[in-house]
Amino acid sequence: MGEYPLLENIMLLKTGIDACLEKKAFIPALILTYSAIDTTGWLDSKAKFSTRDDFIRWVDEYLLKAKPLKCTAIDLYAARCGVLHTFTSTSQLSFSGKASIIFYAWGKANAEDMQRIMDYKNTSSNHPIVVHIDELYQAWLSGLELWGKDLDCDSDRSARVIAKAAKFFRDVSIETVSRIISTI
Image 1 (spheres, rainbow, N blue to C red):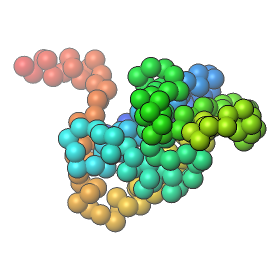
Image 2: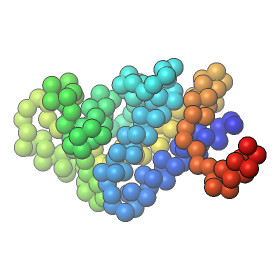
Image 3: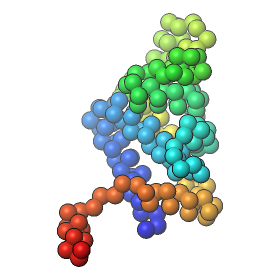
């Protein structure tokens, strides 16, 4: 089986995000990007199931090293929780002041201009951060490159990732199903 399920599914995530961005479906692109980060964090962990710590560690070790953003890994995790669970910018972590709220720029919007407005309007210590969706996506892609280099240097880790990826959903054609049924 090898690397095929890993590469195939990472490419499917990329294809889905690209399609959403092309169609200007920015929030679905954001949801898929957070899901992609979650997936790569889980793949790289020793855990059976995905955890907050896996997400934060992968973001710190790869995504933010490859492309620094104006937020922290915990800010991104909190934002992920808000988007995935409530379709909003807030989460329990941001509400309790443990993470900054992230607002998003997309398309031709300038994140720096939006940030200046946020900074001007909000004087609290936990003011919102603006991240461009394209920058977050590019940070994930760049993080994948760094991660891939680390996997190339560590055969045990690479084998663990490939074994986990073997559990991914697979697309099985109707012809294949028919062929298998005919042998039963």
